[in-house]
Length: 148
Image (cartoon, rainbow, N blue to C red):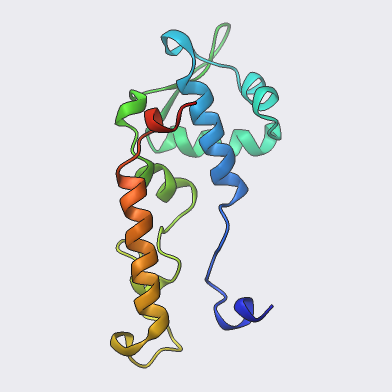
């Protein structure tokens, strides 16, 4: 595919990791009284591989979104209120940089090796607009906003 050969760092789809992470977070947010939920319950309800979900939830726990309780009645639970979990933070943890190319990333900037001048690069100019649009949406939405 031409896009892959010209722009190997360009991503156009949300990864399964991020999609499943968002589904797990919304499932946990929908629980009454923020009760701990066993991973198997989330996996079954959201149709996610148990092993893959374990990895995702561990990442979310290590970064302060989730807590976990062991033993009977244990499981994962939200540490913050859904209205305090901003999508920008979730996306960066699960998906990585929000920018589609490294030369427009706010937190992971790198100069593109194939570009002699960012100021005249049409790809750079377009990707700045894409990044800014995505950031606007992510910054203005919380986990509470995406609950259905």
